[in-house]
Every structure is written in C-alpha cells, then in structure tokens.
Length: 156
Image (cartoon, rainbow, N blue to C red; front, side, top):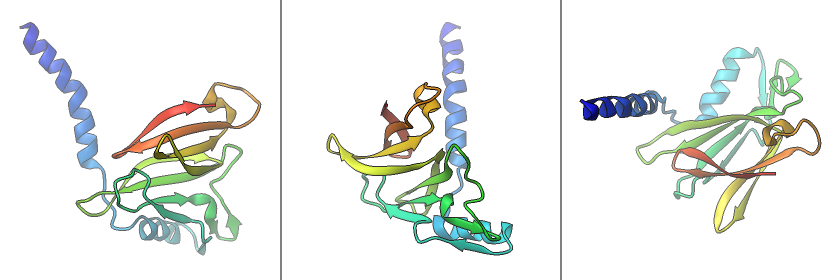
C-alpha cells in the first residue's frame, strides 16, 4: 500500500510537467509569429532592427531567438508595454524536431550575452527587487539556458 501511495504522489508531480511540455505550442519562426501578432493588435506596427536577436542561447548549435518588445512601435507609441520595470523579452529555443519553443518571458531592462566559466550565459538587468533589495543599483541575474530551461547561476 505504501508503494502505491508513493507512486501516486510521484505521478502527481511528474504528470503536470509532462502535460505542460506536450501542450507547448511550436512556432515555425518566432519573428514572424510575434510580428503577425502585433500587426493584428496595432493599426500600424513598426519594428526596430533590434526587435529580434538570433543567437544560440542554449549551446546546442541551433540558432534561437530573443524578442525585445521594447523595439516595437504600435500606433505611434514606442515600446507600449514597457514600464519602470523594463520591457518584455521573449526567449525562444529552436528544437531539432523543427520549430521554436517559447521557454521564458521576462520584463527586464536588457541583457548581456557573455562567456563565463566556459559557457555562454545571460546577465539579465532587472529591478533591484529581484535581488531582494528595495533600492540601489539594478539587479544582475546570471542565467544559463540548459535545453529548454533557464537555470539561475547567481544574482548581484
């Protein structure tokens, strides 16, 4: 009986994650997907050259994409979804089966993509509260993308 209960508890933790992963929508191209979305939302949508950055964010040899919504002008208003906490950024990973998965959305001021400890990592620039501070300099959170997950290395 104890074995059955443990098995049931394990399944309760494993199934939601696997169901969520299987329900994740693959997009053919995140740039087209996101631009089409804003072309429907805005009467006139314009995109800065830095709206989409293509680079290998998870070190698997496939080119991924980062979408910076701060590079959008919607109906004459530049960066309409940005605020004092930054702008929305969407991180897409290309999968070998074809297409891209949205793995993270973050409201940040920006990022650096640099090599640390032999791996490429993001240094996300965020409001101080993400580093458990109420004021002072912006928080810098260093994260690495492993497969399709963000892994926080450290915050300062």
